[in-house]
Length: 554
Image 1 (cartoon, rainbow, N blue to C red):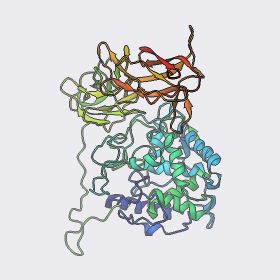
Image 2: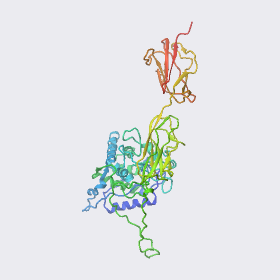
Image 3: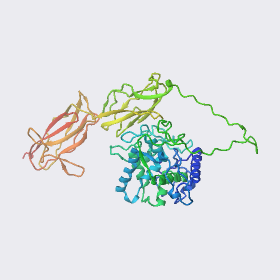
Image 4: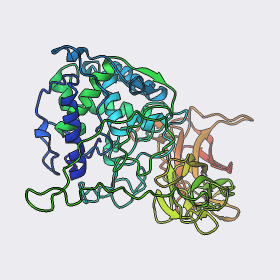
């Protein structure tokens, strides 16, 4: 799990035990000889602040899986490096996931060839962190159907990391959680996030974006991953644990001996999902091979030297399957209309979803998380980018009021059943620029200047929309020629840019809270005459102002 700079996450006792068993399994199977170039800190998770100074981006716990690949003991001693590939299902990597790894390798080969990043290393980390995006459950763009989230980093068994993203990625505005198929802490994603599929977004839940970000992360500094020492340091920077390093190394060697592509959604998901990154993994993925049995502790004796306190093994009670009326089967749009708002205003429409059971009826008490995604500063009431609410008796839940920011264009709001693997319900929202239908000068003074001088009086205008003040409206000011099709004039009055250069068109002007705009100083060149200044608002309102350049009277 790629974590926050300068912090280490502490692995809980249970996860450490699982990792220890994994290492024991590796030794027992005489798995590929992953020779470690360094001890990686003795295999213990380091606490916050104990990162080695040369590892700028060390991480901590990777609580998802530490199962080892199904390796077979060779027939002859000393041939562990030539172990045959077994378990064809295990060597299969979902198509989109495999493409993402190879694309990341190619991208980094062109931008940082000295790193020599092998895609099999990304595959090894992706296997350990998320089971290859939970068997490749991604859409056509490579985005997971539901977020893959690590445990809440609230100090209970893990490090305490307060929220760094206002819940934008992990849906938690109190504490951080690792996010996505490569398990990035939000604050680390803010530094290392990449747009791997060229859609204009950096999304940790997208396997293309996450794989490319992980590649850059592993290549930090001057690492050459063809060197064992640098590769070990890179993996330890992802999770500073000897057990983690050995496990990733074993998968790395396994994938180097051969892989094959399988359809998305059919990859093998390791069975040890308890305590993993997805609180409620989808059981519908292709069946996994039966995992090797893990050693169990001896029964506690009733007294020193005695036998078990209960010589008869107890049979755990069977749990009846949930009734169809209590099983969540679908989350759907509950009639939400078009989502459109002007910058700075609240969306009139509110997002509403409905949870249905297996019988098609409403299902109450379903936790639903609404998340604002994309390049936008729109937020729910209270400034939150993610909120979690519960459905009522009619199976519906309505998100808080959504307020547009200043960023115009489209963005997405997703509603997911929290901790479930159902597809998200996505809504497209549009923010339009503030508009004005009228603009006029605030006075009628004649605007004159001598050749080569500046105009003494400033130009001030006011914009309105349907008679009301139009604040924050974009305005373009242009010195224009006469005629039926005016163009930018190449002589006469002009503005100056920040470097003092002559410009005759100004953009990115906006009216203030009173709808007023005061233009920068206007200068005259040596050409006398009457000239025109045109101001145009977002919304099409226009005003043309005369500027006169003449020598003062004798």
